Image (cartoon, rainbow, N blue to C red):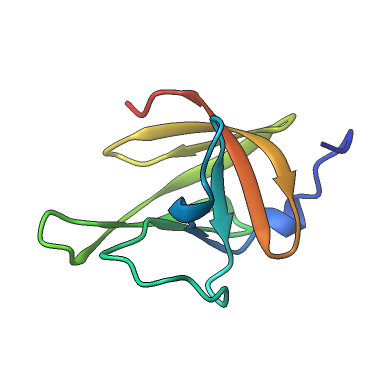
Length: 107
């Protein structure tokens, strides 16, 4: 992880690539990645104005949406919505991949 995180790389849409998860890491890709078929994927968009748009599969597999806020302190990304808070330690961010380690359980 570089000393200073380039926030402009984070400010886009990230889709969970659960097939690539492992060893305590969670992998997200940009929407143009060729994902294998899946019954649903969580995703989030981090906008430059601090707004986070969250999408996740509901009980009936239809996508549910929530809006909240995001911020980064050091290499820790915190996304807060009315339904949940998520804290992720950023291990690597590139133009098309984001690798994080969950540092706190969703609340």
